[in-house]
Amino acid sequence: MSNNNNNERPKKSPSLPTGRQVGDLGVTPPSVGWEVSNLLRPNIANLKPYSSARDEFSGSASVFLDANENPYDTGYNRYPDPYQQEVKKRIAEIKGVQPNQIFLGNGSDEPIDLVYRAFAVPTVDNVVIMEPSYGMYTVAADINDIEIRKVLLNDEYQIEASKLLEATDEHTKLIFLCSPNNPTSNSLDRDEMVKVITGFNGIVIVDEAYIDFAPGTTLLPDLDKYPNLIVLQTFSKAWGLAGIRLGMAFASPEIVAVLSRIKYPYNINALTQQRAMQSLENVEQKDTWVKTIITERAKLTEELKQFPFVQKIYPSNANFLLVKMDGAREKFEYLMDSGVIVRDRSKVALCEGSLRITVGSPEENTSLIEILSELS
Ligand SMILES: *Cc1c(COP(=O)(O)O)cnc(C)c1O
Image (cartoon, rainbow, N blue to C red; front, top):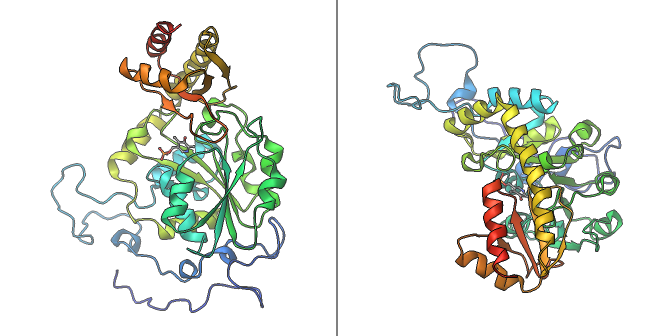
């Protein structure tokens, strides 16, 4: 820890209305009295975060003898900016939000884990998730020892807000939504998502990992309206940067401050920050890829439809297709033996008999179709 002399810790969580426990909120946001601080785990409300050498100093200097770094320039001998201010400034411009509404994580996985650690008390609190959806919400709940309450999608792969809300109780701190959803590939109905957000007094996380492939459906423009909303996006899909591990969480400055307090101090390394800046200066490249992939998605859909064993291709707002077919497991194995790997989702609830197929390059998609042709 730093040797600053601010050793007092707050003895109690901040400004709880009298007679209420931490986490016990009587009101739904955005009502007066709804405060993020009331929802925090007590240990997080009381946390005095690590203070890094660079936290102590802001301004300009030419001699840095504060962080025990090696003085010889390797390009990476200095610690990276713990708050990634340059990257956030650029993302803010592109996304139309303020820099203090952005949290950056080591992939989306980091904010998914951090929301549990910030808000949900192990063995006491619970999370409501939609089924089927992305596996990490469940894994992170299990790691944090949080009860999972699953609510099945309807037969159009849509949520029903009333069902999700009915599954909550006074210990439900989080609801995860995913739109477009993995593995079903469709966007969720906006009005139903808004009903969940406004009808729940905990935190609602809307995972928009595939949002670039579903133009016009992001909840980001409404961020200011919903103080309990966290929108997740990522550099792993449309931006073509899965390898650098960079995820974005957009939320109120209060929520962003909480996540920033509990993250690893230097969670985004210097190489990642630099590589992200490079792509952020060339948004057109990302947009071109997205256009091509959307075109290829339509083409691949038409081609797959021709196969007699294909029963159904679900309408996709993402960069993959969920395809229901006869003998899905055999098709999966045949493709694998031919060097083409897709995802077998045939054991997943409501996805029986379905494979999840990423839309690849035109050449990759042609290989897929050629190999499947050998089967019919
Ligand atoms: C791929 C994906 C992500 C991205 O995760 P990262 O950790 O950012 O790579 C997030 N959510 C969903 C639903 C995904 O399918």
